[in-house]
Image (cartoon, rainbow, N blue to C red):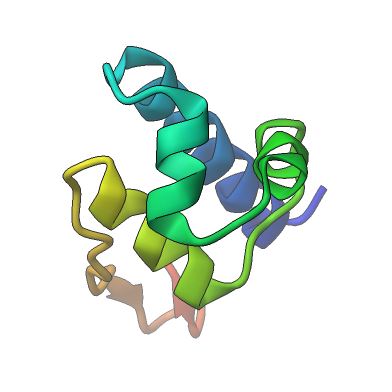
Length: 81
């Protein structure tokens, strides 16, 4: 797996945990996000949603999706872990 794939898996796992801990029923979440329950099931099984869908899901669960700049190791010309 690549680092990006690993991060995507962590994001999907976190999203699944948020949804399971939220009192909003699955059908209501899908209605708020304007997505079929079958698509939500695919997300829960590891399919990465489009960015606009991801933003709507996090918003419906009461969260914001935030990008944060990582430190750069200039000696290696790549992002630090």
